Amino acid sequence: MSGPDPDTLHEACTWLSARDTALARAFEGIGVPQWRVGAPDYAVIARMIAFQQITTKAAASIWGRVETALGEVCTDAVLGADEETLRACGLSRPKIRHLRSIADAIHTGALDLARVHGADMEAARKELVAVKGIGPWTADLFLLSCGRLDAFPQGDVGLMESYRLLSEAEARHEAKAFTALADAWRPYRGVAAHLLWGWINAEREKAYAADGGGRA
Image (cartoon, rainbow, N blue to C red; front, side, top):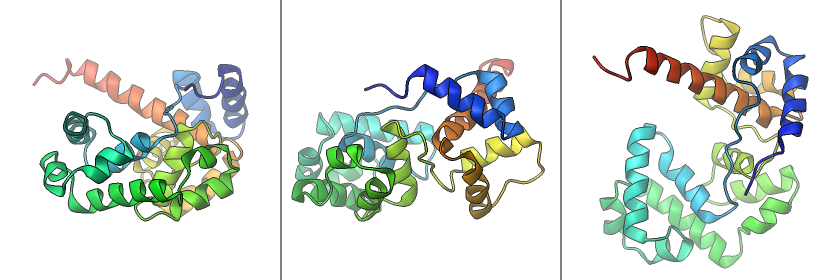
């Protein structure tokens, strides 16, 4: 699966740059950002759940063990695995409950990811957040992975910190204020998110390289 085409992204980045100087700096720094694309399936949501509220390094290690234990991360595999197996991978009990709740919703038809992928933004988000275990942030992140140009993961700390640095502010916006600020980026809030992620990740990579790749 591929993300939005480069011409569309370039047009959106140019549009955003004309309306926000911080986004203009990000676009100048990294160009058209690489889109975080994923297939509209259970494994993508499951991975998002696994990565929540822990470091990327720790989450990647846990996810690797999950893939090894299950062979394929799918609804049948998660519902068929006992809790001890999933706990041994490093998943917390709440995350296991969420993974199973989402898998069960797909099995019963309460959640149809193909339907979500084809629905308009409001209907798609409503169907996702109706499932226990899928909050607004996860729903919007999933919709972004499906290529939705205006999906926006509200309260994402990485986005708020990137914007703070780009705007040279002393403090980050509060989540509510940042969401309100992002309204000016419609209908390309998802593109703005990718600009902000892309820029801060590039800056971190520069800092890591300057530090000799993490050597003391």
